[in-house]
Image (cartoon, rainbow, N blue to C red; front, side, top):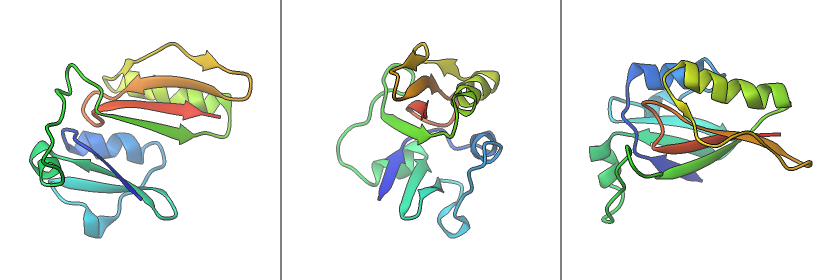
Length: 124
């Protein structure tokens, strides 16, 4: 499974995820796309706008005004789930919604500043 999103690829985009323990598949990463494994057979592809357009004839949304992708990242604890949005905000991102505790799961949604065209959630 591959999830593709249309971010603005920069060194800081890759650094943001690497400092949170993610890696990138070097053969599938260049100046236009970055392949970030998120599971045994699952990748999140961060792409430039031009590269992203090569995968779909449909228009994509304005990243400044619209959410174009949502990702849920599994965390081992509430502290880990809180750390990811705080790090995103410290790197120039923003909180998308307040933390939510559903009893059986907890999450806090954020948007990154330069990386993901949408929101990410840390859930336990």
